[in-house]
Image 1 (cartoon, rainbow, N blue to C red):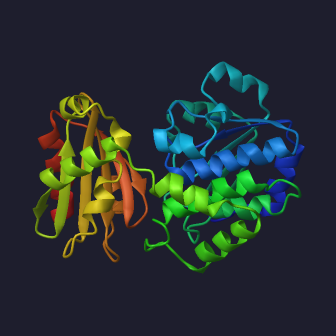
Image 2 (cartoon, rainbow, N blue to C red):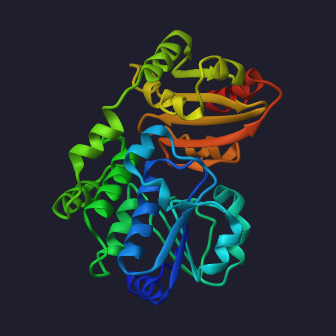
Length: 320
């Protein structure tokens, strides 16, 4: 965690001074990553600036219902026309993926985050673990800049807060989570639309993957897990994002304190999602696997000979 944060006033000044703002977030972006990043892009555009989110990842079908994919660029050559780089919700250079080296080599950068293992440092920084989402921090910053928050910006930020708090049920929820949501409602966030698109829009494919989860999870002591390899994923005509909620569903089982899923979307590459009940720290497990996150929600990507080897790596760390 960066202890000597810059003030919102300093960050505001840097944003207002810039002519073109490139925004970055972590690989495999979740709703908080997209909410904080795309709200920043829209806010900069509301100030008359050129601004885009740079990510190599495609939005999921459900994310495309909420976020405007036309706000995304992914060609590195386009970076040359931007004079300010902003990273949101990203704890390390590695988590920026292909843009990590571009970001740290640039001279005019801002890092905004709420992870406590933040090792990504910009020219200006604001990192605060007391916020349940990065979207809450972006809200505080944008409130300092007049005429930047319209209903679309507010809706994006609400999506981010809702996503990272598990619709205000996760252990990271605090007073600021609710006060930020109320503030966004007053600023025009279309909460009904966000909730419907984010949580009430299930497809037949969603049901197929839920059936797979219920038929294929395993429990060991107080841990539940589910594995899905690339061949099965291909057979089901699915992708990694179709399995993103597996660990979140398994942690709801009575008597379970840890849950994880392992998804192989490319041969030999395993995406691990970890969840835990209060007082059980999965961030430490994720960090040992080269990942990171929060106490009760974390993740990592590892290589292994097969999915059983990947499972044994994760399970042994939990059982210890």
